[in-house]
Every structure is written in C-alpha cells, then in structure tokens.
Image 1: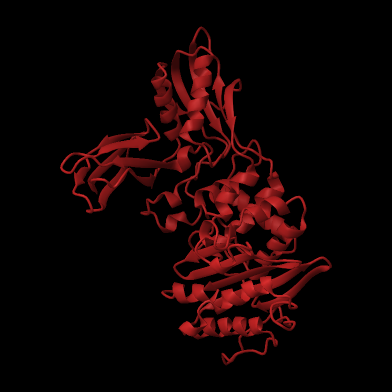
Image 2: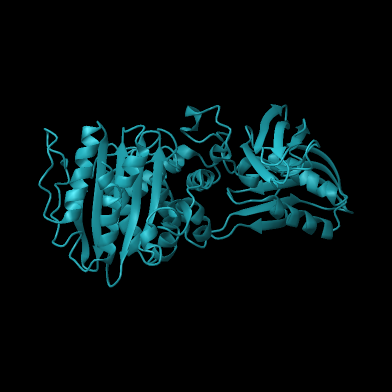
Length: 484
C-alpha cells in the first residue's frame, strides 16, 4: 500500500512539467460523463494508456473497495476550448467539504466585483460635544478589527465628541439567523472556526484570551480582546519551565454581557499565548467595544443596545480591503467565517436583510446560468462545513474553467488559491514543485470527506483544472490524501 503513496499527486504534478500530451505520455481518453470509472464487479476499467489514467483508475478502484464514493474530473484549458482528460462519476454530487469555497469565491467575485469593499460607519449627530444616539452600522465586513473601531473613535473625538447617551448597534443588513446552515450539527463546538456571522462582526465574532506567564509560582498576566466585551473571572498560574500550558477559557452569556471563566496554568518562559473562542450571540459585541474605546478617550458613554436603522447622517466610516484581497482567506487559509459572511452578503435584496437561504438560491441560479448544475446539486452554506452541500466534480471544474477563461475574474480568482509547498493549506504538500508554483488548489476535509480541486500550471502549455471528491471513507485520511 505504501508503495503507491503520493503516486496520484506525483503524476498530477508530472503533467505540469511534462511535455507530453494530456496527463501521460500518450493522450488519455475520456471516461463517459454519465458513468463510473469502476466496473460493476469492481474491476479496474480500461481508461486509456497514459500512466496517470492508470493511477486515477487505481484510485477509483481503491475507493470502491473501501465502500466510498468518488467524483473526479480533469480538463485541459486550451486556447481552442476545454478537453476532458479523465473523469469518474463527474456528475455525481458529493459533499465537497471546503472545496465549496472555490464556488463561493467565484460567485462573489463575479456578482460583486473584485474592487467591492464593505463599509462600516458610525451615524448620528454631535451637538455641543454631545450625541443622543451613536449608531454603529455594518454591511458584512468579515475583516473588521478593534483597530478599525479605534480609528472611528479618534475621528469622533476629533469632531468634538465628549458624551454619548446611547450607543446603538444596527445589525439589520443581515437577518438574525447568525448560526450558518449546518453549523447546528455541532452546537457545543466553541472553537473560533465556527463563529456566528453578523452584519457587524468584530474580530470574527470571537474573543481572545491573552496569557503572559510570570515567574514560577506567580499568577500569569491575562487580558481579553476586544476590550470591553467580557468580564474576566479566575486566574491562571505560572508553573515551572517546560510544563507546557493547560489554560482553560469558557465564555458564558449573562444577559447582554459575557463572562470569561479562566483557569489552569502556563509554563514560565513560554511567551505570550492566545486562546480564541467564538461568542454565542454576536449582536452587541461591537457596541460594547465601541463604548470601551470611547471611554478610553475620555468620552462619557451611556447604554448599549440594538437599533438605529432610522439614523441616516454619517459621521465617520471605514472600508475593508477589496474583495479580491479578502478572498485569499478563503482560498489560501480556508477561513469558514469569511466564507459564510461573504456568502450571506450575496443574499441581500435591499431593503430586506441578507439571508443564507437567499444567498444559496442566488449561487444556484449563478451555476445554472453557467451550465454547472447537474441534478442533485445542493447548496446550503458557503464554507462547506458539516453535511450541508452537494457538488459534483463537473461543477467544480466548470467553475474553475470560468475562473480561468473570464479575464474579469482570472487574476484575482487564481491568486486566492493556496500554492503547493508554499502557503496556505498546501504549504506542506507538493513541496517538490514549490519553486515552480505549479499546483494551486483548494483542500477539503471532513470526517468522511477528502477533496482537492484547483489548477495544475504548466510552462508553455495550457493549464489543467481538476476536482477530486471522495466521500464515505473514515479513518483513512492519511492514506487517501497520499493518493490525491
């Protein structure tokens, strides 16, 4: 079994560097689009004479023997059109895991444009240094940081603000279903990767505990970010060098505020450590942080609550980086929070708030218009987390084709993929081709899903777009990843 390790990935990359036609040293015939590359009795199909065809057929047989499902397709993106090089059940929709993000990225880039930026502003009126209402309003910026609000606060102070009666948080650009579809399948998961989404989302709707060890036997120094959103409860001890860290952090909602229970210990000399947890209800978090920052600048602040959609006069604002830059968090780092927030932003029809369901319908329509919607396709969320979506390899490769052949999309779309051996989720894979940057792809991993889709770049030759999805095989991720 180990003798075949990396064979599939090596042969894919060999196609990048080869001067041969197609994948192998001879052209590889196409598998029938509607059929399987696996014969009914599990025998290896006759799929062509090229060595890559043989390796891909071996993959299909291996998946079948392990009672899994495979959908795969590879196409050459030539100047005269595409040519299918290999396919196995290409129109079979399977759970794509995080390769869903390459669809979310393409749809967002096409529908919104690469230069689209998200705006977050503060609205109200300052009279004689006082504001009865300050409204913090956002439209789905996934990258909003405490430092952005700090700049807004400085602007307000420079405009003479000294007192605020009420801080209002206007979350009306999104509906109140802040848990994305599918995320309810793991309700007790508090890791930051499955944070809820909202129109104003500060620090990706997570709270970070900073722990700086002291001398052995003394309490460590601890603080929370962003400021003002949670109250600390407990202490963290400093133990002897080399003892590691056993830090606990639990966020508990108490009314409108958060209580951060901390405990455990950290080793002397370990350096500052950070521990992030998602918040359960994100709606007022930006308001509490705005209040804390204003107070740090000497502004007297009253209550914090939701509302303010009727206030139109803008006092100051900030903008995100353009969408073309934000997409790198999807393709390179597989950021679920960015993916779900950008996805939901596609579901807004003003004046109605954005919904994930509306976004799903819009993306499905976008795929249908591009003839990339085989029967059984299902889209519920934009990140690919959990058991939510069904995409076929033909859909993924069609999207990759559009991303390559549309000059309005191509530079930004291809730039957001992880590069084999270099960065993102592929920084430890395809290292042999690190210098050539030949492999640009998106990974996908769940308990019973392994997927990979992207581009194989070849010098002086047309690139190859490929997608491989395997479902239904648990406990053999390492072996399967070696094969794809």
